[in-house]
Amino acid sequence: MRFAAMATMLILAVPVAGYGQGTSSNADQVSIDYVRSANPHMLHSGTASAGGGYLGKRSNGNVLGVDSIANWSSYFYEAAADGSQYTWSYTMVGSSPLAKGGDSDEDSRGNTTRINAPVIAVNIDLRNYDGTPRYLNGVRLYLAATQLVAPVLSSPVFEETSYDSSEDPTQFMDAVMRAEFFHKTGDDWHTLLSPRVATARTIVLIRGTYQFATNSDGTVAYVLVDEGTFYSKLFPATPTDTTTPIGAAENGGDIRTSDISTFLFNNVFLTSGGACCILGFHTYDVEPGNAKNGWQERRYVLNYSSWITPGLFADPNFADITALSHEMTETFNDPFVNNATPWYLAPNGNCQNNLETGDAIEGLPNAEYTISLHGTLWHPQNEALLQWFAGVTPSSARDHAYSYPDPTVLTSAAVPVLPGCPQ
Image: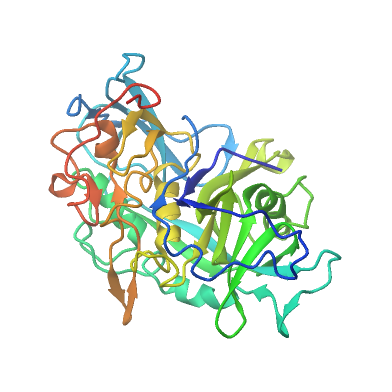
């Protein structure tokens, strides 16, 4: 019915021409190389000296009064540059690795949380102005995502592989979380996703709301769509709306408030303010409660993530699950998109004040981390750790790292700056 503030990833600085309304029969078609020369940087959600930070040792429990995924809360201390705030609360997914009800160093060993994670493929059906199916040189303009579900399920996002933050093989996001709380966790503390394939959905786009590029065989390579149009097509307008992928999945029981749901697209990139492209965001859809859940607000935690065909963008490692790993790890660290931090100016130039772990690294030369799994090379994104945002020096994460899996991406903690990062 309504969605929370969204943490979005990856704007590529490419101006977008107006969507084709002119006399040319294919005025809305762009070259497949249209996005290739772009230098990626971030578009993010709004607001929400290094070395002064200190992580709290106590868990404050979960967020009360909402029906949603398993979560826990804690805090850290770090002075804002303008002196306006010193204590910062945060909420994360799973069960707490910290002591409960006291300030002891005793940890909570043996706590593994498993969260159901439906994956919903969303296909794109490009139509003419009158709503009829659109063809180009005899080829239907249709971009399917269903064939990508199996590869994604076998990727490091959902499959287990080896990381030095875990004694046993585990999933990518869990490895990042364990690195953050390495000295607080036992071998059995994990936050794991249990994926399942949910019903595929389709979004119909009417000509004038999209642009597209084609492969050499005439099939659709990628689609550009205005973000406002995309939101209206993805999110339900009312609690009973089944015309959108999220509304249909909620009302059909494919996704639940206890899930982390992925709406997987195939090279579908959003345009914003005349620039391309947003490739993912994480958020939650808000629906009213009922007698069955004690009239608690229902929060469906979810992400839109685009599969990225290798070679579309100039960075050869910016591919496959880069967007999905970014959004999933940020979901684990900031599920309700409201974990505020001191303002910081990240090495990639992003000026923010929220705990968005991928945003501080995206676009850097070594932003992605290559993992070989089942004979396939995957490209998840490196992530900033909690200690970087909290200014903890030296870092209390594994090996005193500020980024993971590659600790060389961020080598010192964030320095609080004045709001808006004035130069």
